[in-house]
Length: 263
Image (tube, rainbow, N blue to C red; front, side, top):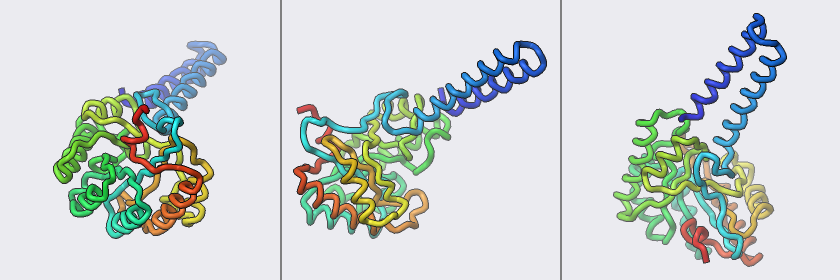
């Protein structure tokens, strides 16, 4: 069942209760309490859909094992020239591997960048076929979006895609079912510096380093889907700082596949 239908149902139910109380069909106090409970339930369901750190609607990976001092840098919304290429140079200079959650339609436009990411030893994962709020799509649209993105990436790379991060991290039962049907594992994050707002490279780096802990999955952006207009220069500069600072603290940088291994 879609979360949007549940929210609509709760709103209609609350309205009907209040109407019934207003015209004496039920006691006003009873109607008000029941309506408040219904609205509270809808609010909780909505929060569980939009907050990344829960598996209420289905299993979502938000961090790796804390046994080892490892951290995974992940980059969303690409490929996006020239910034993805610039980021690859930083990662190559620092000799680390990251995970890129790519948008299928961007990959189709820039397959050469996808292959550069792959050649650099980085992990390629799916963000979406098209960068849309999956909660707003019907079942057919939802499945087509995911399948298109997965098949596009696999056709370019010749390798299976294992992981998907839904746009904005939003999910409900149907989104999770569609991800699982595509034989993908949902991944969100545990550290989010809000780099897409371009608050400055230093602030991005400070936010990540302050929240970093063993097993952390960091959400950053090499792209700007769906508009493809904003600069990612600050994120690239911040990535270099993050790597240097956390490496000096003993962290090892790994991919999602590596950080989720039990060892």
